Amino acid sequence: MMFGLLKVYTIKKNTMKLKVFLIFTLFFSNINAQSSEDCLSNLSIFAEYYKVKNYDSAYEPWMKVRQECPTMNPAIYTYGKRMLEQFVKNSEGDQKISYQNDLIKLYDEWLVNFPTVKGRNITGEIISNKAQALLDYKLVSKEEVFATFDNAYKTDRASFDDPKPLYNYFKTYFDLYKANSEGVTLAKVFDKYEDISERFEEVIDDYAKQLAVILKKEESGTALTTREKANRRAFGINSNASSIYLRNLNAIIAKESTCENLIPLYRKNLEENKDNPVWLNRAASRMDSKDCSDDSLFVELVGLLHDLNPSANSAYYLGLLNDKKGAIDEALKYYNESIELETDNIKKARILYKIATKFKNSGQFSKARTYARNALDFQPSMGRAHLLISNMYASSANNCGTSQFDKRAVYWLAEKEARKAARIDVSIRKNALQTAESYRGRAPSKTDIFTEGKSGEVIKFTCWIGSSVTVPEI
Image (cartoon, rainbow, N blue to C red; front, side, top):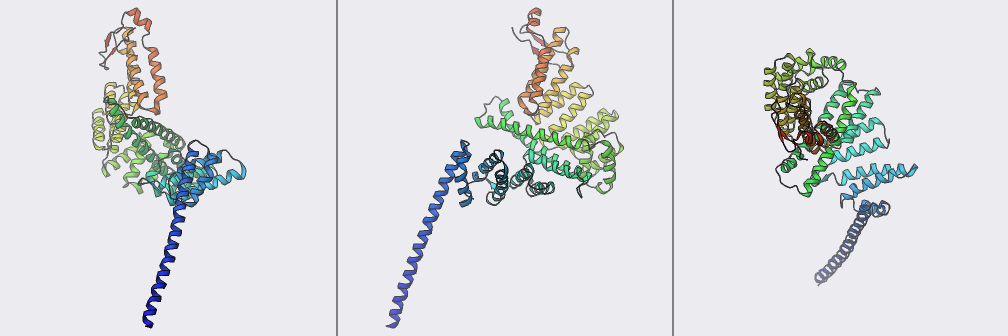
């Protein structure tokens, strides 16, 4: 009997525990549901205010979402970053400093809560933007700024592609070198420069590859979608920004990378790097770009590089050496070998353009045009190739055509190529349009066309141009 009573009591006791558990579970579920509902509401409110740039009204609901549900949506960080940047810009004194520090804090929270977007790691992007903010607001020493940039680069190089932080990554290191910071040598500065400039080229090349797909579709006569039109503009703008920062990077190193500095430095470090193809390639590339290729060290570097690791670059340099000796056929053999060894279309286009430039400079315009057009086959967005052809046409005006009118008609061809350059390559658009207008001004005027009675006539050029142009109708 006692056992029966004990059993009934135990059942009642367990039932009571279950009821209490269910009540607490329901209570906390309601709290979580309410919290989630509040978060969604605040997220929506802050997003709507943000879209109309009413950041003051967006701030309070944004902070609630940021504090109570930091993993709800990446907009907490992308929108929050822009809002705080505006608050910094429009405030002063302690309030300004407070916003600056909060932006740095936001980057740290971003790393914890949304280090990836749609499966893509953006750690490098977040840390490099944090480093840029630390630099802009002068919150820490140059050493700490550089360390933050360096951490971003070493942690996630792939997403470290914003041109301004990438440029300042090197600039900060260069400033440390100029300030005689411990351990920062000229050799290390050159290594850092080569590494970062290569990253810039990768970024620019990636935009070029994406543009190539769109331009080929456009040239085929197929209409672009609204998204493709927007992407074409965005890729062009981003590529141009990266090109500008790369030029600025080159300008910084220009005074240090003279032949007088490079040759003894590379000679000093050659023995320990003679089996390092990356170092050899970078040294040869730098000497070539700074016109130090007449020195015997360049010959030695190229020989070691080609023996160690025959590549597109080493074959190009061998072509260059033979070019300098006047062995044109041998040079051409190595130039073509260089193109065959290169597998990346954008890099192949770059080599073809270099070869085209060499032929142009030696007055071999027909060969130069062939290589320039081949470059365009691999990189349709390479406006400078069109500009090269345009300049060669203009330079040949006096040598093509039997009459003064026909000679000046060559400028219509030159103008056409320059306008193609402007259309496809935003990085040289301004220069290309100015060039086109200049050539247009040299071509026959409407009065000339009327006087000569050439309206609508086709003029053929039997010189190296081997093409024709239709005189505009008036």
